[in-house]
Length: 236
Picture 1 (cartoon, rainbow, N blue to C red):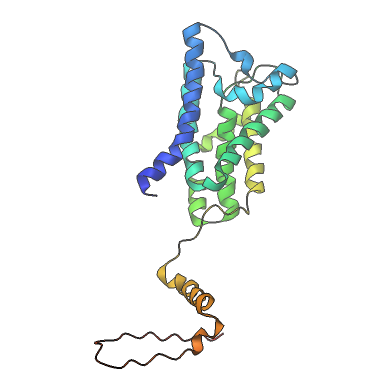
Picture 2: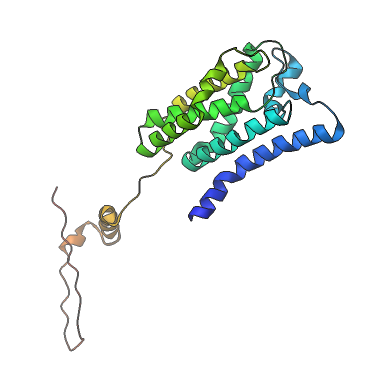
């Protein structure tokens, strides 16, 4: 996969998700309606379904715009570096964050994708630190540099902001990072000298374990230059 296709693939789902956020807001604007009831209303049956729908509902254009860019950036980084578990991290981030908001948040409608943003940022930071892979640690540092100020959002400084979504999102990202810490997401590159052992193993499997004892065949006649290959088994 070339670089352009890789970038397109990593942006596809985040763009789709953010597009749905804007579509919901467009429906509200076009029909002069308020879909806030699709948010999470803690400890109510109707509000329980908001766990799925709340990330797509926003209070105004500023709320939507402020969540759109981080969703794209973090979604891209998540897919490009954690592709094998990308969809599971996405789904778990929505479900775990939303469920805890439904259980433990104050009584109100909690809407917006900010909880998911906190979950992704937390996952990217802690997962890279847990794995200690230089690329993923560098990614952790990049996320801290870009979104380190998000830490202030977990405190109840403004009652109009769902700080509970931020707090539970950050915790869910940490727990997801712990759960997947041993899952392989990056495969080391193999160079030609690393593949020698694989080539020799293939020859043994094809010609048998006694392959090394085969003597080179002698050639007769005027056949021109002849190239012969001799293999010697490595000493243990």
